[in-house]
Length: 274
Image 1 (cartoon, one colour):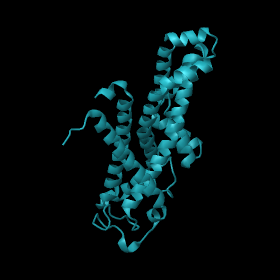
Image 2: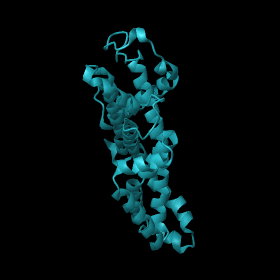
Image 3: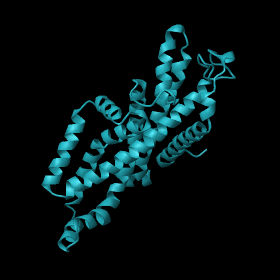
Image 4: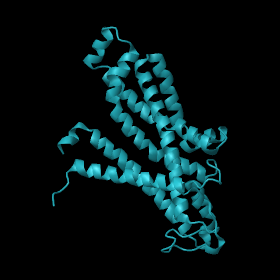
């Protein structure tokens, strides 16, 4: 049997991670009613063949609730990370191309946001926006762009020293034209990788503030709500209520990280020879 090279192994890992996350999202979107269905005749059942993740104090299937909660977290993470990455791209380019005054203002905002404890800032924004889905998405989106913006700014500063960029400027091309036509194609690999690597951070922070009671409402079976409710029953020996949702959350975050690292390797020109 022929041994897979590095590029093929990376593609295999990327495909598996993407397939798992897609299945979770589709399964979760189809299981909304099943995740809320209660049946007191089957309450507090430990993991078994019929209920692999067991059932809770209301007789709800924990496997269905876990998948539904993860799908909500994934969709929120994707939306918030996408908005945050676009903000980072625009501000990173503006900071490096629009002059020292703009650069100073954007750098100050980046330092300001990064200087405030992340969870505290998330909670403040979420509460100010009325909590719920809107508050969580806005909070995660507004707080996750600085590191990627700083990376893009550094990349643009290097590109500005390239001969073809200087020639385009001397030919009278506008800063906007140079940024879109000449810089953006070079920034897309970093942008895509940064976007994917923002997903696990967004998911973890959404779950964290929801767990603390500042995120989604208890009516939604988000993974943070599932874990928060399970804490009350751990002392009674119902370990499965927190173990499996927690493990699935960790697996989801790790798979997003694997996707990001895989994309980074694939977009590296040197990887084609490996």
